[in-house]
Image (cartoon, rainbow, N blue to C red):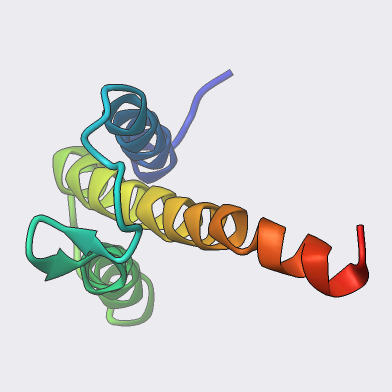
Length: 103
């Protein structure tokens, strides 16, 4: 089964973010990566992928699979960071939620 280059790049981006998480590079506060807000990085990565898709789809600009693959990595990484932020935010609030429910 063949994959499109952008979809394959998204899978690579997801995997890279997960590997960074497992390596301990995405721990601590879920809202900062270094000194940059994580959601800002995620939105930029997803925005680049969306812009590339929009330009190719609606303006019929000819592209190549290398560009699609790179923008897929950026977008997939952005989606992975977005998911990581909300998982970490949710996990940090579970004790408060449980105590509010009386559990």
